[in-house]
Each structure stands twice: as C-alpha cells, then as structure tokens.
Amino acid sequence: MSWGSARALAAGSACPLGPVSVPLSDALGCRLAAPLVALVAVPGVDVSAMDGYAVAGSGPWRVVGQVLAGGAPHEGELRPGEAVEIATGAPTPAGADSVLPYEHADVGLAAASRTDAVRVAGAVEAGRHIRRRGEDIAEGAVVLGAGAVVTPVVLGLAAGLGHDELRVRPRPRVTVLVTGDEVVHQGLPGPGRVRDAIGPFLPGLVEWAGGRVTGTARVPDGQEALRAALAGPPAAAPDGVGLAARPVASADVIVACGASSKGPADHLRKVLGDLGADVLVDGVAVRPGHPQLLARLPGGQLVVGLPGNPFAALAAALTLLAPIVRELAGTPVRKETSALAGEVRTHPHNTRLVPVRRSGRGAVPVGHDRPGSLWGAALAEALAVVPPGWAGEQVELIELPPGG
Ligand SMILES: Nc1nc2c(c(=O)[nH]1)N[C@H]1C(S)=C(S)[C@@H](COP(=O)(O)OP(=O)(O)OC[C@H]3O[C@@H](n4cnc5c(N)ncnc54)[C@H](O)[C@@H]3O)O[C@H]1N2
Ligand code: MOO
Image (tube, rainbow, N blue to C red; front, side):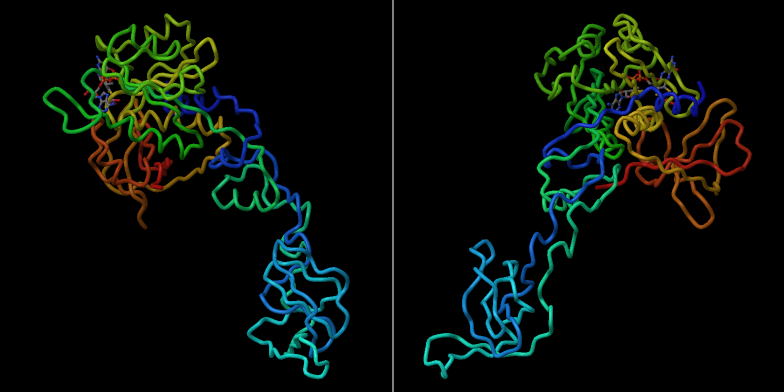
C-alpha cells in the first residue's frame, strides 16, 4: 500500500468520538464540542474598579456607609452629596456616579455637623472607576466557538462564566504495548539489550494529536502474552511492572511496538488473525517504517502495529497513529509544502520520510536518519515526504510533535 493511501485509510477508519460533558478539571486539552456561552454577565452587577469611595453628585461628600466585596450591599440609594467607602469588586450602590480612589481623596471629619461623620473631597469624573454589569462580557455572549482547545486559560474563563462542566470531544484513549525481551526500561542497556526509545515518545505524540496514553504495558515476547494483552487486561509481566494503568479494554486505540515484522518473535499478525481482527493495513511502501500494521478488533478497537526500530516506529506513528487520534479527537491538520534543498536519496517504489529543518532555500535534510536512531528526527522540525522517483518538485512536510 502506498504511504498516502495508508495515511488516508487510517484517518478514514476512525469515527470521531461523540461529545461528552465532563467536569472542568477533566476537560483540559479537549476540544469544545459546543460554543462556550457566558451563563452570567461579567461583572454580574455594577461594581467598583478601585478601593475608595463611591460618590453621588458633586463633592465634598458625607460618608454614610461601607461596602466590602462579598459583604452586604448598601441599602437604599445614595443621595447627592453622599458617599460610601467601597472595596474593589464590591457592588456600587444605586445612585453612585463614580468612584474616588483613596489616593485622590481628601478625608476629614465633618466639623460643621459636630458629628463623627467623615467627609471626603476630591476630583471625580462621571462614571469613572465603575465597571458596569456586562461591560466585560454580556450574559449569553458566545466567547469561544466549537472546536477551540480547552487550555488552562479557557478553564479559568469557563469557570468565571459559571460553568462546572464543559461539553467536549473526549480525548481518545491510547494504550501502548511495548514488546521485546531485549528491551529494557531504565539504565544502560547491557550486551544484547536495548533501551525502549518508543514508549517514551508516544505519550507526547499522542497528546499533541489530541489523545492521551492511558497505560503502557511491557509485554514479553511470545504469542500468548501478546494475545492476552490484546484480548483484555494484560497478564502480569514477569517483573511485575508496567501493566496498563487502565485495562486495554477501555482503550480506543491499542499500539503494539516491535512485533510487526516477520521474525520468530513477531507475532502481531498471527495474534490479530486469531482474535478475528480485520487487518486494514499490512505493510506500507515507506522508508523507514514499512512493517507497520493497522487492524480493527471485533469490538471496534483499532490496533496500530509499529516497527521496533525507533525512527521507523516514529514514521509509522505519524503515518497511522497520529491521523487516527486526530480524527477521533477532531484535531485539525495543517498542510505544508516546501522546496527540498540538499541531497536526498530517493527510492524507486517507496516514499521516503526525511528529517528536515526549514530554511530560506527550502527544507534541508539534517541527516542521521537511520531507522534505528532518532537522532535526525530529534534535530529536525519536520519530515519531508519524498515520493518514489521524486524529481525535484515541492514536497509535503509533516510536522513533528513540538516540545511542551
Ligand atoms: N525478513 C524481514 N526482516 C525484517 C524486515 C522485513 O521486511 N523482512 N523489516 C525490517 C524492518 S524495516 C524493521 S523496521 C524491523 C521491524 O521489526 P519489528 O517490528 O518486528 O521489531 P523487532 O524485530 O522487535 O525490532 C527491530 C529492532 O528494533 C529494536 N527495538 C524493538 N523495540 C524497541 C524499542 N521499544 N525501543 C528501541 N528499540 C527497539 C530491536 O531490538 C531491533 O533491533 O524488522 C526488520 N526485519
Ligand atoms: O521500518 Mo524499517 O527500516 O524501514 O526500520
């Protein structure tokens, strides 16, 4: 299958997840499934924008009370010549024309009346330092459209507008199965061992595409372990670690790394067949990453098989996994094309994915692009899609997941 067909088929195999209502704290990173509407006006009533005195008419003013934010409002209407001491955010009394900040107020006792009443004087401007109801946001205003990403700031905005829950597209749940008896997960790999370089990049890549990795399991080589891992909650790994935090059963997509080729320990194809999966993609004409797989389990979950070589796994994840997650989550795709500057090896039948950096001359290959190494991809800003038999025309650039 050509690289372009595989990518399109992957996107087409995913049905967007239906909207759900979730508490604000669970909505971070999701996309809004409905416009965000102000349930209340901001501010909700006329309030003071300064600490000082709310005054009516012209000064000097007799201070007849005090209003604090959260305290009792001033009862009755201020009459001309009256003032209340007021805190920022406290409701201004009916009749107040403006607020005189403390810094601009001359304060003294009212000698003429021989009482303890306080008088204030100062220059005011009509309407100054009063935030009127709905001045920032009117009740019912649509502040964000459907599709907007719920960022930390959006959570604050939504809370300020009275929302406890948001209607969002759920983030697709991805469970990762890292296979390979030779794969170790910390420290220096000993002879014949290799550090897992795929498990660490998948959560960020999935997050960037709009999903979330809900569990990573280490699966020993062998058909039984892989079958058990795919069929339900994985059996305990020999080292007792790394079981999926949530069972595989609750995942929308399962990613299996390092079992997609044809070696004696590459059981993914056989196990998928035994489980009655519908294999949608079995090998893609792309370098690196040709032994990649996509299948649908009878229950509807998609299984993406990534090759074990780390750069090949990244290329395959960008071909099959990222389009699926984006489609499920409703994450838009940005299309970019560019001239390609510099030496590129082409392949007669396979698309090549080449790590590049952008420059004024076009995309420049950064090298270090062997399938077993992520060095080139780590230096790169994008992967250039070089079709078979490429003859110098513009190429598509596919984004690499950025840092935090
Ligand atoms: N007879 C054939 N052999 C191979 C073919 C083929 O078409 N016919 N394709 C080759 C290509 S290309 C690739 S890529 C690999 C993919 O093989 P698998 O997906 O089955 O992966 P493994 O054989 O388990 O591992 C390959 C390589 O990657 C290392 N590895 C595995 N997992 C990890 C990990 N999580 N992090 C870092 N490195 C990992 C593993 O030790 C091997 O060195 O098949 C070729 N063979
Ligand atoms: O997928 Mo393999 O070489 O293309 O690493």
